[in-house]
Length: 375
Image 1 (cartoon, helix red, strand yellow):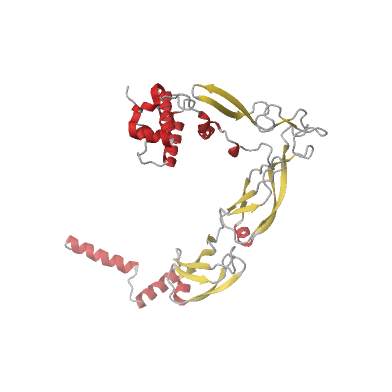
Image 2 (cartoon, rainbow, N blue to C red):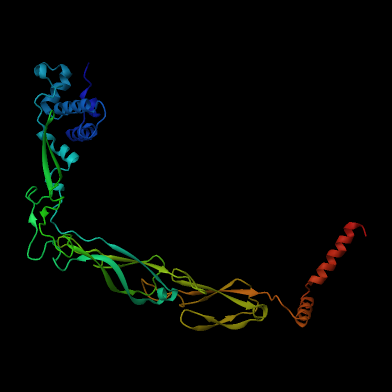
């Protein structure tokens, strides 16, 4: 069977640069490596990719291939197309991608590690969110064991370096394959990747170096916080490992609804009922704010749903100076139970205003109905 063009195998143009050829090879090698791809034919494709790269990555072999193709007479039976005595040492970075090799990307199992962050949900009253508060909360968390000081070993003893991985937390397994010598690095099964062995474990933490406890923390809620705000308390998260710092505590604020006030950002909104007489004649009424009662002047002829603004009577701005405003909407309330005298007065008012009362409107509709009936 005829061999495919090596440029076609790697999916590059004939004028491709060495970097482009190398990138293409890495991509194809990852795709078809027999230890990764178990599909039928993957091994043959991997051989083909390696053969193409062996030629196109070498300037002299590439020049000969460009001139003679697969029929280069200088190569004999073992020509460019065969694996021959290919040295896989040059492909070490490829195998590192498959098996986690290479010293640069390995984590030191004995290096200090920062603890995890914690999240706590706190529900507060509406006015507590406006003015702030101080309180104590209790959270469950892990802390460094005070008996062994976090090393997990019984007092008087200490962890020993793993004799199998020499403290690296990884084992090297060497495989001799048809493609060359492959080094496979994996988690050490003797120390479970810790790099240390604890022969006598601490009786308090059972070798973990951490204990579960309840921690009381004093918290200051700043004035002006709103629903969904997150407060960070530095260093109050889970304990770190190997001497690493603790994580942080994030407090998520939930605010209860108020029976009278509503909030949008730093502004406060409320709705106040007024009578028809107050709306028509004008009045001065008392309005509750977050801190006190204030006077609000209602001009004569005020319509329902009219809005008034009380400047600076809103929520303290958490980032900046001053406060938001309070917005008051007045709603004219129609009376539902009138005395006979009140009804008479309203009829007189309607007459003086040139308005038709309900009785007059009903009489008009009766006359219109009779007109339709031909009476």
